Length: 127
Image (cartoon, rainbow, N blue to C red; front, side, top):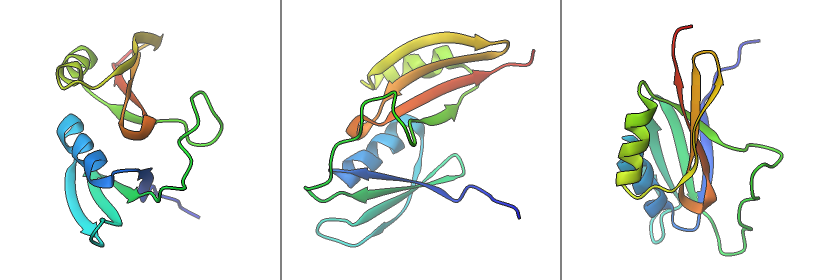
């Protein structure tokens, strides 16, 4: 049996605004919108990964604070973590944890996306 990643599914109080964040901050491309008034779902292509952002109804609980069980964060790889964090900070994206060395050739940082989504920015260098 072979498994391949198909998509990440997020929920947001404002799916259109959340999608705009991923487009502006990370260069995602909007692929389509499903439903109208309000939109039911916005589909993005984020570096080859399909991201579904669903419009959440009012009764849906907020995300659990991290660390937590289940899906905790999305990891996005970059070639230059300093440049990426400077760009994100200039765009007003909140930095949750600055750059740390996590082992030979691995540096990470965390930023916050819409609805409290935790997003890891990571740089892998040859060892």
